[in-house]
Image 1 (cartoon, rainbow, N blue to C red):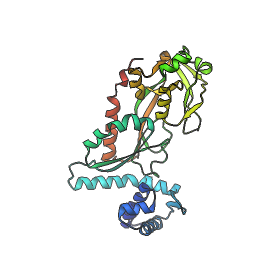
Image 2 (cartoon, rainbow, N blue to C red):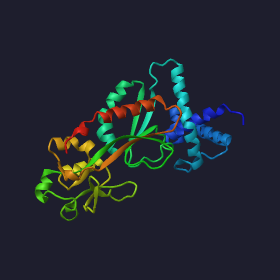
Image 3 (cartoon, rainbow, N blue to C red):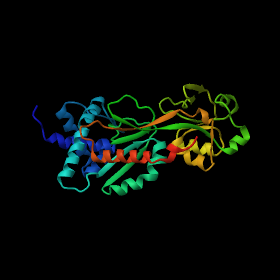
Length: 309
């Protein structure tokens, strides 16, 4: 089939719809009416011979075929955008809008406090940070890159391990004065109230285990408080509600100034990984490369790496 140059226009509209989440908002971004956007998408569907969106009166979602189609063409759109920037002689290729998908632990404790440095470095770039329980579908949701804690699920995305931080067990001095200090992981099963963090993939709380070298002990903890974000987890632990398992990466300053006490330090060799995710492409967009490089710089400079147990 001969190449139809109008496909590029249609794909550009498709990209705008995916990023905006609706025909109306895509039209506002493109300076088009909602019917014009709808017609452009319909023409694209006719040209490629597949239905890209499932449409209802209240929402639109990518079909499986539409998602695969956009996964294939999105890297080329980014390449065209970057080539255009370079061809116009722009001094800084890192520009435009970058949409980032992060979990709360990374977004709240690492990225947001340092984001001014990144944006000052690239004045022609705008950044959208979306904190989510789960990564979801980067393509369907229109994200450029994600940074999230946890073991990655199988996908076509490029994944890169950024760091592994220790899982540490903590409580406030006030809680320990009332309930005593555990001397063995199994003490937590009967004698202590724990603050639990919901696992978004299962709806139940994350399982607790304790590692000492090659020895691993699972512990069936209990607690009356279940939270779904790290801010609430840290706050409840600081308030004396119970024992919590935190990541050393964001608990370090609370330990250093005595707001929290590190418990069972001999059993604290378990680690939790942080990964970045982005779309596979021969040429990764400059804005994505710049962000990943910044995150690597950010995590490599964190003092938690030398925090004594």
